[in-house]
Image (cartoon, rainbow, N blue to C red; front, side):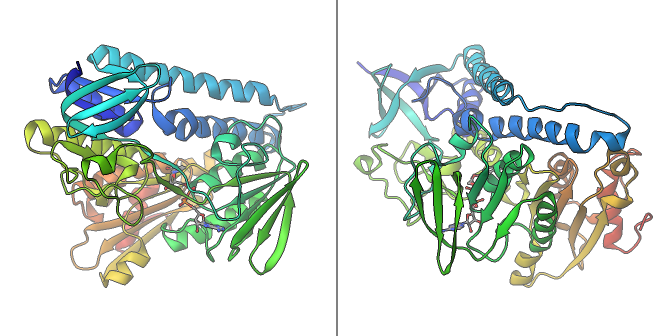
Length: 461
Ligand code: NAD
């Protein structure tokens, strides 16, 4: 006999576990299946959270050695304790994954440990430590994504690896070659560069951070180069060959690069392995994603999909929004995600954050816009923090003044962007931000000044 639930979620990443909790809040008898012992998915176990822990630690290490003296703090004998740094990261991950287990208990979400697979509409087989068949009126697929591979590169889980390995190198690489100047490459490249590695980033395109505003990406490249990261743009990597502890990375038409570690970070692909999709009639789109309608419904009644397995940016918070909207749609008949107001953040130093349209997108769409920009150099708090690189840039419609896009590179950009996301969500104008009081002295004043600059009336530049 199958175990009966109202709703079953396959995958306990940020999309899946949030969907399960929201469903339980709304009164559904809910279960969530995950193959891993620790809940939280890639984000909590081997993605967002451990990388942020290492970014923080490596930044402190860099500050102790190179920055604190400027603040009038003498620190002698700065030493790296890598095992402790890695253990701290592991402690943060385990605390948070246990936190998800606690939330499941509190909300009475039943957890199954094993691989979930559709075996018919409303029927899911779990195999693993828990082996059981489930039946449910609604099934939400939230299985996330996995690392995209590159032809010519064979991952060996050691010298040639992915972000998972780069979160746990047992020693600082002498020379780390990062393939791909996207989110992962820049974040983890920064970590090991600060800890003492020589870092070379090989990027296929003629720019870093594709998809982000080009002006901001250029500024980021200049700042990272100053920090010591080497970029080779227009470099299409074709091979990586290991010989002992050394790896030779081949580049189309260019000299190859030798190193002792390779981090492959050329994107991620939807994870639809062995989900039984074809058995119920779901056909993937050409990019391997599960097709859905505006309400997250697949072609099979009662089967939904959210997060990295469907269209849109592969971001934890986008998956969370979709999880909530999908379940609310099922229960209340209404659920909505505003894809124009989903921020993206690269947690380098300085951070890079954006929400809404880039200049390139507005130009391509022929939308007339005004631009207001304000440098952190002119912000009192940024000066006190010793973090004056970067700027806030606001793009607003020429006629209506409605905010269309906000792009920030600078201290705590990832936190500052929240104001811009709320502004876009509320269809605010640049004047709305410009006339709102921002505490002094704060970094947020740079947002207000950039909004003022949209109409050429910034006070401090
Ligand atoms: P990405 O898509 O951000 O960047 C991949 C880069 O690799 C691109 O610049 C691409 O042009 C380049 N590339 C592709 N083929 C190449 C080749 N043969 N040689 C050289 N360069 C090549 O991918 P990512 O950094 O791997 O991140 C994967 C996903 O994870 C992203 O979708 C991202 O949204 C998500 N992520 C988000 C965060 C965050 O929000 N802070 C952090 C990490 C990952």
